[in-house]
Length: 559
Image 1 (cartoon, helix red, strand yellow):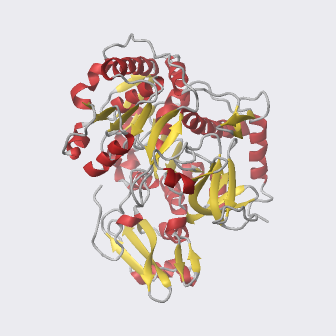
Image 2 (cartoon, one colour):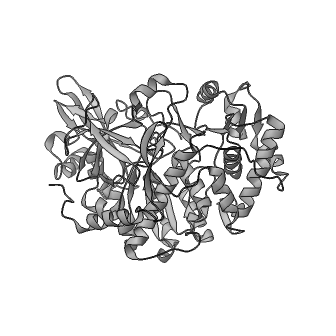
Image 3 (tube, one colour):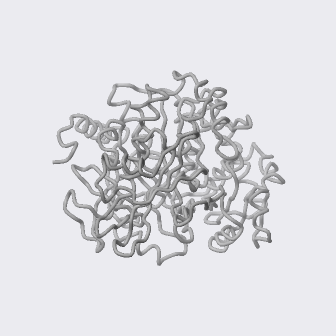
């Protein structure tokens, strides 16, 4: 019997899903052949990103994108700008269907304008990580062989040598691509399974790989997000008219979460406000007040910094409708901290589960589900299939732990020019092995750990998230991560790396006592290290465990 077996709230969620996906309904689901497989799809959907852009133009002159420096782009203007940039890409650089256009830049208007122009041409956008070193950039250029490379001056300086491909510096020449706002949008035929975007995996181990996502992948990801909102409104009998509330968009545009904020804006989900530069809580708080931001979205580490900044007291609580944390599992400690600052938002935090390789999103857990079981990430969303397998690929019995796998029409087409990696991730039948351990109970997915992060002590499996969630509940802890360190006889022992709140003091013994209240003795950290600097994280907020150097006390990674 699962923890939610008799929960009427789960039954209501299932009923609402069935009602919205029934024949003739807005989110009707039917079977179609996709890439040789019979799969569930939404009957009512856009067939290309260009179709979304055209629809956005019909939303008029209201703000779609607002940037930290005050620049504003309306729904109508982004369509005109994309058409102008597309025409220039064709005329000046000969870009056509299937050609790759790479961009390596901080979030800016040019990034978004280029995104929609490339989509309209049926070309392929190579989203390079703006945090990369020159060597990493050159590796990506060599791998993807772009017909054009667009960069800002800061990233271009890191290259230190000619990249060997046509290059456009945003500050020096991108504005000229916007000269023809009367240009028509391209009319090139686009198939929904045409490749559109290469998104690099976070690369927390090894060299990053480029996942190939299609127009269908991106559109499906956003339609699933729309469905989550529509289902919630359906369950309370509410129908929204017009664009949604103003939202914060601090995710990098080269990541799938930034992709979501970009595209959902043109689907009428609400204007997005993009802070510029490094994440700065004070800047975000000022933008919140200036632009009327009603939804804070970001990595949990970013949201924690906002909640703990003194200036947060100047934000009118009634202005904020929700706070969302993505990029990693939402911890109970974060939910509690949110409730302390904004009591009316404690029950608004939900959690989605997915990855770049699955096309963005596989399941979603509403707030009440997280409060009962923090490791639950909900049931599969419509059009998505989930299963748990052993290492040989055989499905396990319900409730048994194994490899989490996801299947849908939206999964990546593979890793760009990396067939060896494809064989371990993209399995026959369009199943993607996510790299996570978990279980299914009553149709609900519970995530235990990333497989490579599992700690094995004396033959016992220890999931870092259990320890990290317990540490996050301590009032003096700002950040914490649990890792395995080598031990001669046990194989591994648990080590906790902790960042304390400013002015707080805590001893290793106090940490162990705190953990022992809810954790088995073998899970209690044997080693505890306190650090003054924030934990090293990638652009999506995930701790870079390989960069922790847990055998040293004072090694930190600069952002």
